[in-house]
Picture 1 (tube, one colour):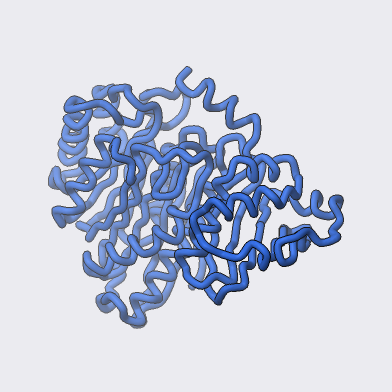
Picture 2 (cartoon, helix red, strand yellow):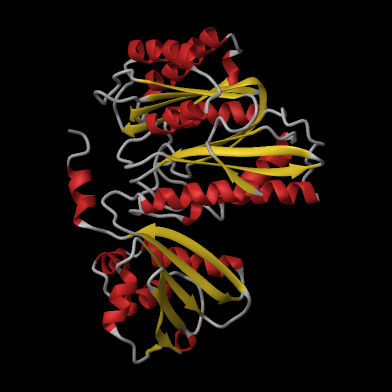
Length: 407
């Protein structure tokens, strides 16, 4: 596997574009298009929140129907959530407009929205934006990057990655882009992720690959504990690589799944590290566990702990908060056997052995915790399974951003 430049336009046959429709933001792009030159097999995963945004309902309907997908239209600024029949009707209008502009079927259009909940989309601006997108789309790496920028809300940077693998002598590319900074919590978050591949793969195998990997990537991140109404991950495969068909459980499937995991994990970590007001990506690893489920539960509890997150913000090795979070996670373990470590590019330090503090240097610990990427490692000594979760520190900046979000 090798990393290559680009994101959603890196794979064969994909085009993208960005447009400034003036939906909410001024002097910046706020609409994006991803388009495949040929119809795609499609897979998707969506928010577990009972309150689901209109585009989530629209996309689930398309994905579950098995329709081939050829275009994704995304807007930022307004979430089209809690907008009733009118909001869902606007999804249909969006699909109709895109279908006409791109000369594809209406049910070949899926979409994503992100931004303020409860506001209706300005459809005249949306329709004009779609026409601009259709006219500007191309397969350049630059257009893919511009599309990634257009879907940002409080994000501080675009998020994209592409990798290549070889299957049956053919080069297969997997590329993606994502957005997310706040309202991020396991079981999908205010995050949108769009993955494209030119692989030949059936719908069942594609959906299984995505669903299995989401459990290890996007569902293992948290910024603020709020599961959004709009979370969506869409994966398109147009088959233009010409490889032999990837079948579930085969060696080719495992190779494809690893490439997909690389892209998804990268995007998930970029979302976590770009949490609103954050100054550091915070990783928690639970090792020595008897099951993957136990490891995931423990790791999630640590990155979701506000007390732990504020300790990271203060570069304070307040390890009691970590053990406390593990203790209320619901996972069973012996706290008197736990070893804890902090690690970053500044080094690694053990702070707890068998449930009690060791004689460590607070100064050295603070230096390690002052880096932009910090890891806490908990070894519970029960087996060979492990898992990682990702979050960020919690600073005053989070309050500043969210207190003024609608203004």
